[in-house]
Image 1 (cartoon, rainbow, N blue to C red):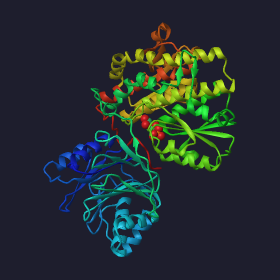
Image 2: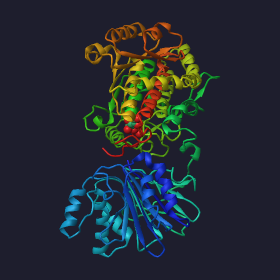
Image 3: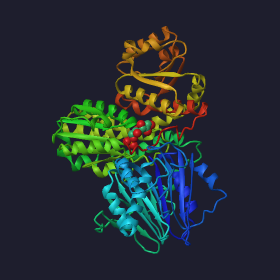
Image 4: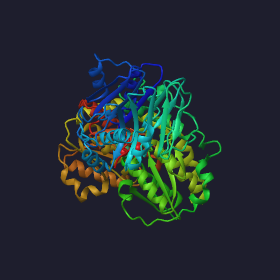
Length: 615
Ligand code: F6R
């Protein structure tokens, strides 16, 4: 939610900032802006409604010189997306410029106080309140910028990652974080700031991930950044080397990140399993399960907390863990869990699943579960993000940066880690037969090759999508392990094509949704040859009897369903609990192609942002 980027060094800041914003645009894209300071202490701010390309067009004929600057791409929380509310915001004195990701929850009280003291505001954002407060303190108390920032942040309730420029000191940027991600990149005689490492990896692989309540002070000419807490006590941060390359964050010849990420899935799953699955030894090794064997195998119950697509993966995880490990599992929306009064204690394990590792609701759910003594296991993608740091242990999914706003490869990565976790725990608890274990390990290892076969049907899915772009509603059905896949397919379609879609367990259709079916209604049904196959066949008959249009996801060579359905996509045979890793792919492709046919902005759908760092 909002991307922030900063530069201080020897280059022209503007091109670095614009490139950085483009890499962070997945975090929000309703307005963008940049502030630059020249060595002559001139502060220039350009901002506009729309995307980073709109900002570029706007600034085309303007003076963009200066080797220090900050820039922002916004996902609006307070105040509509227009150029006034766009960041950077400038203080009343005209000295300070700020960019901010997060929410200042007590902004109204702070604003009232400042207004009573004569401060006037230009925008309706919470962010402007913060820069005015810092400016006010600086003027009133005659203190330096760092002191003013520390004093202001002590009064702030909420979440923030901020960066501040001071017109009177073009050689310094101050940045701070609380509950919103912030990275400082350390180059040779230059520094970078980013919401994640993607804006800076082109220039340096040396980074420092800030912790909550850290303030970073970067000085031009200094070899290192300085870090302090709100009490001005020095903090030692280790410089880490970031393992990310440009190819991972560029489209690589695909028209959209989403399509690239769908096609990357076989490789991603191989990366996810590398070093963890040893087929020769018929073994799954997860270091977290070795290190925390006692806590995990003795779990009385597992509660999985997540949001959105990660929540759908959790529903598959529940079935895997219950079937393989015989542990009762509950799946909760993190946003509901955090405000519930859950009965949990130290005998419970809470698994938090998140692609970004920054989702505010999931982080809050973790904090609540920790307070109640539960052991917390994280399953995340973004390395060094907040959730892995808040959990006791966990596993990264290692699928590489996911940039398309609609999650695809993270979902299959999460399901793969959940499968490996269930196998490792099931073996440790003695709840899985050795033959089943060996067969599953082997089959999981073969899934990437089978995924490639599904991806070969991309043209078929594209042709199907052309038939159905007329539809205003879609129904997605599945059972067992494929029920969460139906939910995920419906979510993908809603997100990027803005077509209303609902996912249902197929047997529930007759309890209501069947009333919707007529000749206009496409129904996507995952009807593979699993134990509920006959029941799914009956569901298809029921849809056809009401003239519904059936798009069936079927097992390879299943002529029976192929003959019944209007359209079909075939999946290679696999073990039932691994089917979601294959069946989800045609649904991702279907959503993608329908959105493209409808001319929608696939990678940056309206109103959405990739990481939801606000409530
Ligand atoms: C859907 C999507 C969202 C996220 C949700 C949780 O395509 O991307 O529903 O899954 O916002 O995000 P993470 O996994 O980052 O916690």
